[in-house]
Length: 59
Image (tube, rainbow, N blue to C red; front, side):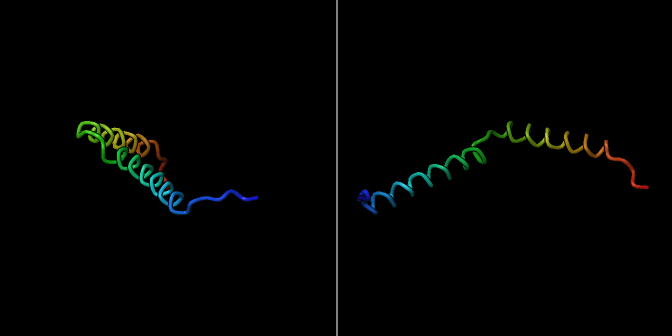
């Protein structure tokens, strides 16, 4: 026989887990200090320069 569940409890539990996942994503995206953001930007720019410098000419 199937287990009886309370749909309101299930709906609220799903909403809580979704909200926690969204909060974790926001913490990762927006929870950095200004220095951390600048360091990440500098690292990304350095990698782009390295890749662009290693490209071969098409001619």
